Length: 459
Image (cartoon, rainbow, N blue to C red; front, top):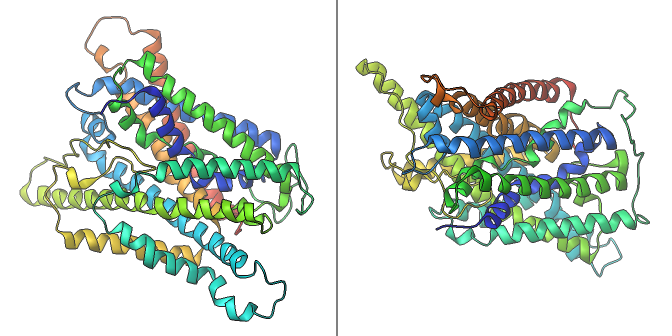
């Protein structure tokens, strides 16, 4: 089904503006206001360059086929497909864990607002205490809502998640602006307009840099957007990422800037947990809770598909060694989605050309994803730390490293055996791809080092 550029813009904006907006104000903390805005701007430009590279390299995919990362991997080196699947699996798994952490943050506050709405005393606090335990809340939501949805083979029942996501983020933005203008009931900390004062408890800006990268990550749905466009010329396609990233940038400036200036250095990884209980705050928490609950299966399905692809890759590699052949792994023919949902990553394996896996294997992989996600979510309370790790690994791979690698290897390849002069624009995009590849590697290494050894907040 063909769509117009406006639909493509909404798809990318929806994909980028997910649960990461809750941690955006916290990302400002180790930078200070102005340095954070500069970093946010630079990361947005880099993400936009990655999207523009994707619009340039689609012409190297045969016109009879849809563009996808898998198709491009087959063009440059089929053996790299396992790296792409690994990056997708890590990002989707990490985002799923962050959704469960948000459930653990918001459910107790929502239950508290409902249970004690008309009770000014604390006499019944012990009676209802068990309902305020984050582990119990995560367990109940996982068991009765998330798990049944994840075991479904089709995601069609979650089509309305996009509208819920957009409305939820818009409401959150309005809530943050309202409390910024009315801070009478809030405890405001020190706001630094330049670099914050560093002390023993301060953390390196590198620990929250990946949150800025994560916030713009929508590159895994870019090819799906391109495939659905009636006019696939670069002149038309380039308008889609430019407008989507621009809108996301404005949204992050408002949420990040006003959220940080509201709480200063008292800000935590999930800003909505800091607001006092009220009907408006409870509605906002319910909206975000519904968003992440419905979005978890959209992470589980592509994560499962990528894991299955890696299993097939390893099995084929083992067979090749036994047979003495070098056939390698053949990527999926078409992984694009007709109706891209948030973070679906175009990886629905049920329609692939791989051998049909047994439902038992699918169920076992799904169960493993749910179990490990649950164990991490009840063990880790820091949304910011999870997003930092996901941003440093999966997001940098999808936003910078992969588009940069494909751009550098493919752009200008038609001039390799030709005496024709290589146009300047081709050279610019080719070496822009090289820069993004190097930048992505640098961000990944530096951010993981900072997160592991320089510390990050546990809030």
